[in-house]
Length: 217
Image (cartoon, rainbow, N blue to C red; front, side, top):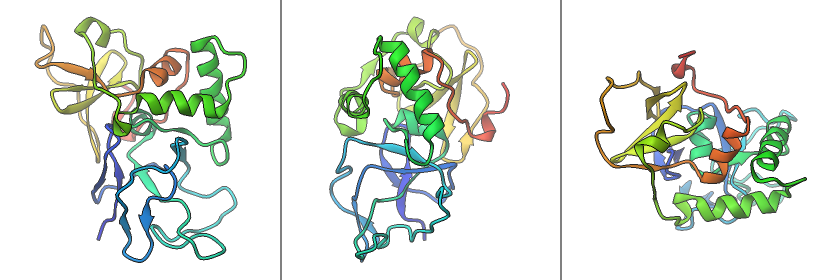
């Protein structure tokens, strides 16, 4: 039976059978005895995106006891792709995805005019913008939607979409569908899902990994 560990673009953690391209965590938020989430949805501001395969070949029991002392260890969360994880407020891990993390930090520096941003600085800014951490929804105009970089996500009504080469692709846990038929205006009110800091990083050149269903549109 699937565990409650699939993350949607809004940062909510749900129970879904779909697999993902990446794992990651927000600290220890599960009970290893019942294999269920505790009430808290994070214990750290360092919300990271990790490779599914541990760089040293270590294996883990999902929602189990994964520390040498028998403690819970970090709680494994799963994302359809990196675009989804970024929208939820996560950023690449400096341990298992070091090159991606360095690229993200370099783009952050370009976007915000910082010489060498520290990881806690990045995490603190992201945390203030994460919808799942209590940030207010950010309404976005149709004109601004059209200027979003590839990989940014918006909600139209309650449904998430990802910008891909000037088109909005409807998101699901299983992947993306083709863009809806063209219309003169957005059919409902839109708001930005991806944290503005990460939108700046995407505009500054960071290229996230997409689910294969996004294709080469």
